[in-house]
Image: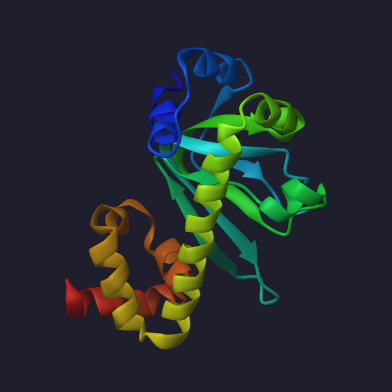
Length: 190
């Protein structure tokens, strides 16, 4: 059941069979129906989520009442609200299933115990956080330096199957423009 997660971990660090067995005793699996939430604004985040199957998105609602998609999480990606999880403060974000999604739940209440028993997981999570921080910087760079059409072209070339996978309004929100503008770009580019 946790094979995709263990394979992902093995790309970065080595776990013995005993280590993997121990880790699995601390994990649980959860299925989230399409449009249901793992986290809503105001709740305290209690876990990290590894996507086994499906798609999640993190978004906020801006002062105009519009949803602004911050990130997506698809198979083999981790997703959480790190600020809320770390500080145990109310989240400012929503984490919603774009499609029916199965996740591995790594609860905060057991994380320190697991990491003390399996220190190689500290390295694994550090590597992932470094990659995530770099990706966030590139996303900010693209939002500020590329035209809307260039952002769409870049995203479409980097994640070709993903463009068809999520609703147009979510993709437009993630790329920083309206669904109508996305329709015009797609008609021109595709």
